[in-house]
Length: 323
Ligand code: AMP
Image (cartoon, rainbow, N blue to C red; front, top):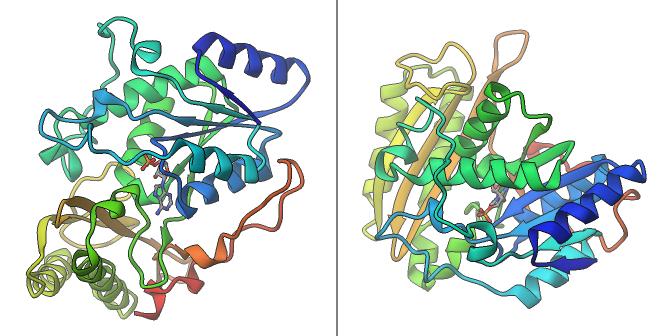
């Protein structure tokens, strides 16, 4: 694995890979890598010959009172993780490398960025789409891999690629959970032991909503109220929002009639955490809820990309699925 810090070095490496007939896969991250990130690298390694992982804590996507300076970092560990997953190039640019001048050009995806996390973080998604567009332009990937943990981000980036005819397939990958159901996140590092226990209520409440949907509940207000009340019982957890939105345009729905996302954000101690489950429908009309997968099913690859193991197990193995 090569670690590079300069845009031109990364561009040259990707140009070389494409000239050699290799497909390039991109996994953008902010580092402090965990099994959620590993699962993206493994998905990339299965489909693409030359996997690029980027680590950049992008100032443009943080608001003035957010955790930019405190965001956890551990480059040595991250390099070990990426290397063990068969990553070809790890790109770790500094802020001035990515933004030599304050950008006068940004990317804004209308509508999809207004609700959910966009309500409390009004500039966040413009920061995300701008840096992702830059990474697409530098790397030229055939495919780029994003986790369904950040479901709104995935919807926004997918829409950007479609609206701008970007020559890249945006691939959504399963949400990876800890053994107790908590969604993996670099920000879990902010939680003390009691916060960490309290955080379980988020996936538990979503799991109960998932059970209700599978049992036939279709009323969004009822589902939201159930989640709100479960979370309200835990002192350390402050719910920011819970929403049931259309899976593609994220517009809130009153009654579930098609694919939706049940998503929430909450403050737990010093961490702002997000979580979600996705509802789809089988041809026979019954609901299927994607609750994510367990981190224990991810494992370590430790071989070069191109010869990776079988696809991840199905969602049914998630701890959240067990309630
Ligand atoms: P981050 O480093 O948090 O910006 O995340 C980088 C990428 O990893 C994004 O596409 C995230 O959606 C994805 N990711 C982060 N946590 C998880 C998780 N628990 N499961 C699946 N993907 C994740």
